[in-house]
Image (cartoon, rainbow, N blue to C red; front, side, top):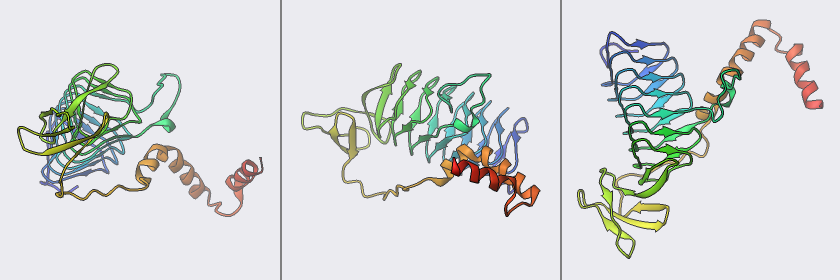
Amino acid sequence: MAKNKFFVHESSYIDRPCEIGEGTKIWHFSHIMKNSKIGKNCNIGQNVVISPEVVLGDNVKIQNNVSVYTGVICEDDVFLGPSMVFTNVVNPRSHVIRRSEYQRTLVKKGASIGANAVIICGNDIGSYSFIGAGAVITKSVPDYALVVGNPGRIVGWMCYCGIRLHFNDAKETTCKACGRPYLMLNDEEIKEKNDQSEVKSVPLLDLKAQYAKIRHVIEPVIKEVVDSQYFILGAKVKELEEQVAE
């Protein structure tokens, strides 16, 4: 990690290896764990934990007392409110090890998650959506949706700029604050009209996200094979043959 490219308060811990972008600020009593990736100009508040393999885009704002667990990916311009909660397994037990069952949670560009909200793992949070304070998200949230309650439900739509939208009978509206036009497609989807400012690329397969969930299982076995030097035949090959035969 290059020096003087980002700020880390002296009370915080940074494990290596990890990536931290230029202009990012990490405040008091936070812990950035190994193999995490933090983009440029992020602001990490007090008492924040970034777990291994977490990916944060540019300009992500994380308020105090948030733990971002393995499996979470936040795209650019995401806001995480104070004490909001991520999970990474759906059925945790103290006496059952479920590290191989971590699920991905994708928080898309520009989304805001309010204070004390809970995001159940395995769900996507749509671009520029707004999760109200204390909401519990049990299913994926579409772009621009305003979601509140337990369980979370869509009660309206938000503009790119963070102002609530109000649609007319023709299911069209223009944001009173910034002038962006929107069209409602159905009861659970809207889109911004005439927006040529950005061409979005949707990956067909996110191999990094898949590998992050099982890395802790695969790498010890690879090390075991390398240490044994049995690349041809050997116990692991025999074990695979028996499993395939079965």
